[in-house]
Image 1 (cartoon, one colour):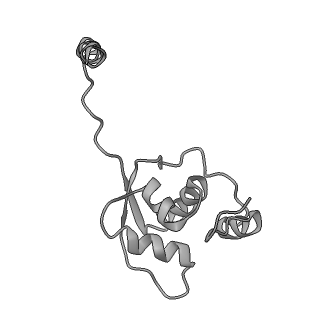
Image 2: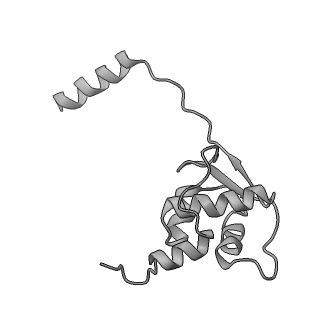
Amino acid sequence: MSRPGRDDSPDRLYTLTGGRARSAPDNPFDLMTLVVAECDPSTGMQSEHATILRLAQRPTAVVELAAVLKLPVSITKILLSDLLAAGRVSARHPRKAAVIDPDVLEQVLLALRNL
């Protein structure tokens, strides 16, 4: 079943990624990785690459880029890998949240149950 306004046919996705179904194992992108454009789109560039560069003028999460592009995250990661290899984007991981004490979490859970 196809979703309205979305063309994610296997043929189109195959074409977008040059036949690659997965990104490389050393791919630095996860859902929350922040992507930042290092340049402006250029003439003749694949439209999805150009869109990513326009969207990533400010740090933008991979999952957000995939949503705007209306592409699966796996395909978006492949496109981002292409841009990263060409030096057109950089990837930054958000700071890890401080580890919360399990006892504090348990107290919060008990308080919520008592509501």
